Each structure stands twice: as structure tokens, then as C-alpha cells.
Image 1 (cartoon, rainbow, N blue to C red):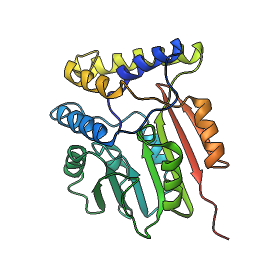
Image 2: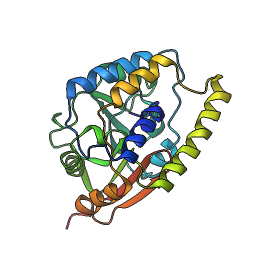
Image 3: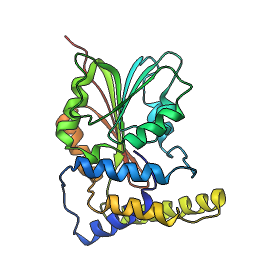
Length: 251
């Protein structure tokens, strides 16, 4: 569920620098659903661009992956980028409003199935996938439970791609992020004539992100080491990281 996270990440970055950010938070499913329903409605008739890292995520999905699961499809920008002529995509999201807009975005594509519900509770039966993709969703879920479920849903030799937000650690990381943020603001101004998103959109993201917590890059490495041996972890500017892991082939 990628969106106008930059303002929220600024606030969280300041909290992290002051040492007041908690390391974990509980998952409130109903609040998440309400938040993203609101954000989806506010996004109507506004700029809905793909995330700057979508191409990186898509590039890490194996070309031969036929059955792909997207966990947290949001408005469907990444969904549309993941579709190919030979791929069957299953996209799940908690928010009915997000799902409705994602479905409209991909209405001309017959190889996408949308599921509205809780990824951790949905019954996939015996279904498994060649690739599972999660973008900006893991921080909403209990990490170990969610990652373990993603691994279970992967076929042997399948690939897991987790792309998520992170918090800064250290002054150099803060300086890099704020330098990159100024470029984002300049780019938005050139496209829309605004330095920031509209007030109501910013407020919705601010309310949503008030209780969120994110892993540091070090914690992302630790999570991968613990649950996904030999995974590759990539550091990105603007508070992002990506984990890419290939499930071992069954003996």
C-alpha cells in the first residue's frame, strides 16, 4: 500500500532520532481498514503514480513466475506493473475501497483475481505460488507470522520479494533521506505545481501513520537472517528496503 508516506516518514524519522519510537506495535485490523478506505477515497481524481521503487520490485519477480501473489495491493499501481500475458496474479488487500479502485485499474486484464480480506486469515487451501510480493505492507503485520505465512505459500524454488518502509538509524542516514526528500518535493512541484500533497491527503496519512513503527535496516537484516537464510537485503533512499529470498528446492 504505497502512497504519500513522505510526510509521515519525516515525523517518524524525528521521533526515531529523539529515541522515542517504540520497537513494535499491535495490529488493529479495523483501524487499518478504515484508514485505507479513507485514503482510497481521497485519492479519487488525484495523482496516482507508481511508486519510485515499483520497477525494482517488478525486476526481482522471476520472468518465469506464472502464479504470483501480491500481499497488500492498495490502489493497484504495482498490480498493473506485475501483470504479463502469461502470469496469473492474485492480489489481496484489507480495504474494500482500495480493492474497488485496484479492480477498476485492471478491469481490462483477465488474469488478475482480487481478494478483499485479511491476508493472515484468508484460506488459500492448498494453493501455492511461484512468487509472493509484499510492498509497504509488512509493517502492518506481525512480522514473523506474516513472513512465515508467505514462505508457506511459496512453491519450492519460489521467490519472496518484501519491499517495505524503514526508519533511519544514524545521522548520515537522516541527512541522506532529507536530501532525497527535497528532490521528491521538487519533482512533485514540476508535475503538479504543489510542493506537497493536498492538506486532506496529508492529514489522512498523518493520522494513519501516528502509531506506526518500522524496522531499521539492521533489523531488516536480522529478520532476514532469522527467517530467510541467504536472502539478499537492499537499502534504498527515502526510508525503504527490499528483501529478496529464494525458497530452497524440495529434496
